[in-house]
Amino acid sequence: MTDEEKKQVQALVHSAHRIQTGLWLAASIWLLALAGAIGQQVARALGYTAQLPLAAAAAIIAVLLAVTAYPLTLLIQQQQLAKKVWQSLPQEKLRSTAQVADPITGVTDFGTHYLVTAPLASITLEKGPTQVEVDPQATQSTYKQQSSYFNIHHLNHWLRPAAVSGKEFLAALPEDRYEQLVNADRQADILHLTPADFAQLQRTSE
Image 1 (cartoon, rainbow, N blue to C red):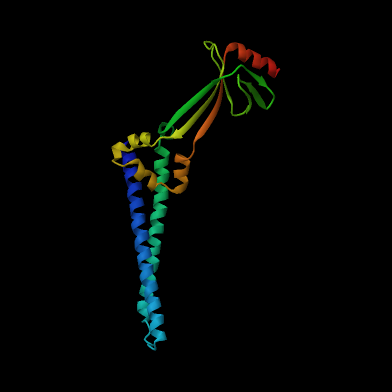
Image 2 (image 1 turned 60 degrees about the vertical axis):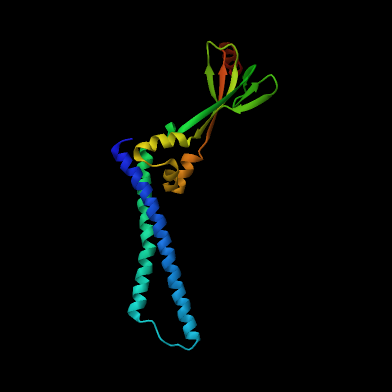
């Protein structure tokens, strides 16, 4: 992580803290204004006819507009900061992979799908996303499922120079960026074939 990236990450987290403070402040002032309006209505109902001076009413409206605009401005700044941080985020390095493999006895090409024959059952796989590997050293063909998932430990390691935790960083991300980073698990189907099984697959595709 460069010094510039460190500053951007820290600014993003601080921005999220300011947004929370701004939202709390805006909610508190709006509640006070609402309580004041209710109090004035009660006073009128009890026969008090005193009117709020026009200057005071204008000042209250100005304050309400200001405290409403403040968190909105911070949200825009957060989006801009998040975009910069996102461009430098090493997303692939923040993921871990897991893989399982099962032995298969053969693969047949059925045009748009592969028919994969295994000792206990057969399955069909769509050809487009399925990867085919040929291993000259393999003595047994296998069907592998490889999953890639977000690993917060990798994120903590990347954030260490900025003295920011992964939890703080994720909380500072806009929702769409968070979903794209954390919940974008990927799965790949891989046919790891012996030369003989690969040759047989080629014959079935002719």
